[in-house]
Length: 233
Image (cartoon, rainbow, N blue to C red):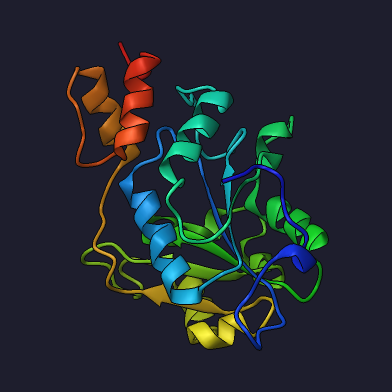
């Protein structure tokens, strides 16, 4: 576990694999929950990346009123992802920004840091895919990274659930894990069997009502929440 980004030459990778692969998971993590952990674990198993880069949001433009402080969210992320099988880097670049946080800016910064050869895979849930075309510069995300999406139960890649332009772009870029590992950016992968449907909003509501959502939140995170009296009315 750590918080200092590694440069590509420092990353150990499978024999014969010269291109470093970085799996990137961003989010508010208010609080981090088992859905986030399952999403990361799925793609770590699928891609065998050299590093899992977790990026807590600073001032996300589509969300308002984060309850936990940046320091508390970083501490919860450290506890949630401590058992990952690959090196963990908690990247605080979005927290350090004083302006609104856009994913396109973060991916541009990652590409500049990691270089043109690294395979960067940005992970998201299917709920984010459903409004991807509302993101700033969404169609330029592919210029900097691949997109790895985990679908929730009942999700389908069709126009009833995903905007047509997103479906079209995502489908034409669909690739295998091997193709993603062997290229720098521009491809997509949809995981159809990750049946984790958890809402941070519901978790906060439970905590506000003095309920203990211990099946939804990693035990170490829940302990931290209780020790620091977070999400209380």
